[in-house]
View 1: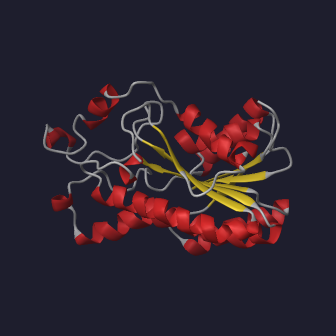
View 2: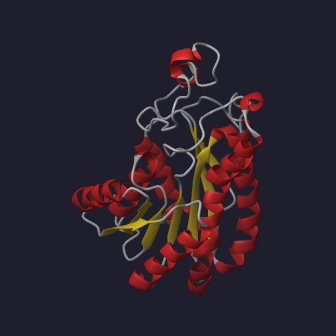
View 3: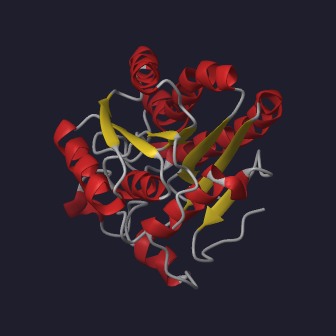
Length: 266
C-alpha cells in the first residue's frame, strides 16, 4: 500500500475493535496518523500498539462517549490542538457497542427505545460530523466516511429503527455532500451486512427462550447463506481507504454496500 495519506490525520470513532479497528489500521498503512476513539482505554491502547507495529505509523487513543455531543467536541478540539489539522473522519461505533439495544421486533419495543436507536445509529455519527466541520472548513477540505448498515437500504426484520436511523443518515449525507462541497469536503457512506470476522456485539436477550421467536434467531446464518462472496472487516476497511484517498476525490453523497451480494440495494 502506498503512503498516499502521509501527513494527514484521521479520526476513527469506534476504532478499538472490529471494523473501526481495521479501518484505522488501513488508514495508518496508507500513511495517515490514526486517532482511535473509544470508551475502553485498554482496548484503545492495544489498538494503538497494533497500528504502530503493523503500519509503522503514529497512532493515538482518545476516550469519548459518542452519544455525548460535548464530549465529542472536546475530543476533536484535543486532536486539532495536538496535530494542528484533521483531514479524515471515519464515523463508526456506538450502534454495535455491548450496551446498545439488540435487534427487536417493532411490537416488542418500548417507546423509550426509539430515541436510543436513533441516537446510537444516527446521531452518534452526526455529533462527530458536527464536531469536525469547523476544522475541515478552515482547512477548505476533508473526507467524511460513515460506516453504517444495509438495513438502511434493504428492509430487515427486527431492524425497523436501526434501518430507519441508517436510512436517515444516508439521506442526510446526500444533503451534507451538497452543502459541504463548497468547502472541498466529501461525505460518503460504507454500509455493511453480515461480517463474520466482526461479530455483532449486542447482548442476546432471553437467549435460552429465544428459539425461533426472536429476530436474532438464525438471522446471521440465513443471511450468510445468501452471500455470493465472503466479506471481511478488512475489505470494508479497504473501501473506507478508497473514499479517504484520491480514489474518492470525485465521489460524494454516495453509499456503497460491501455485503458479498446478500442484497442489491439501489
